[in-house]
Length: 314
Figure (cartoon, rainbow, N blue to C red):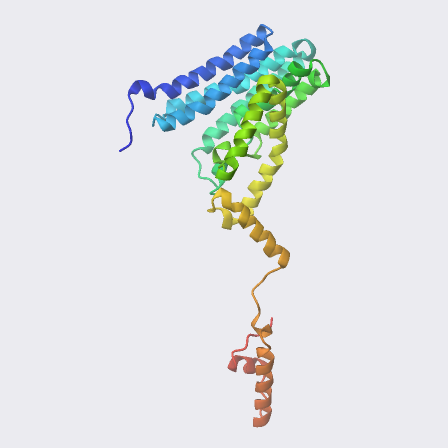
């Protein structure tokens, strides 16, 4: 029987969602005070809470409609409104009205992205592997990528990366990626083979060292790497759409399916034709022709092939 939890414990996922909402709003307050490192930290706390609330809800069997709606509203504030206002406050003196327009576009695109996500949850997946991908850049990743110019400014200081036109253009690009139909990889579908656990833990240690010593440079590197990874996710989605034989194959075994498909195309393999096997077709045709000439009534080609069950050459 499934475990039952007290009602107080079942409220924990919604409490974590509220914490994410408060962290996102606090980031705006820190921006007004000019404390941009705390802005980035607050949005990071919101992203961490957003990653935990859904898992806690499934673990405690506390999923509900109000929890899903609250999660969407918290994502809109923490990853849509807050990053837009932070970037606007940071570039307010140089951007002017253009900066406010960019902030509005970014927040509206986040709202549209979340609304589409909620509607797609009720629709059947066009492909069995669709659950491995998001449609468009997800909300936490969009907030992470949009803050790249700010991370570079906090690490290197003023530069071409902190120019108001570039910051606005970068925010618009991220907004377009949010509402696009571009498939992006879902981290929930990733499975780590046992032989890669030790190297992965080593990478985690390296990442932790970078985040503790140069946190903003590390965040900028991660965001740029995420953007550069998007073409691969598009290629992977299209490859799966063209290979139905790999739909039901576990993710760790799809590489073997891909190698087999490439080998077959490279070698040009195809089923053998009967007329080329051991010269049997030509020998039987000669025998039929000789028999027809001996009887004095040559057989027509189609009739001879029908009697000897030869396959007509196409």
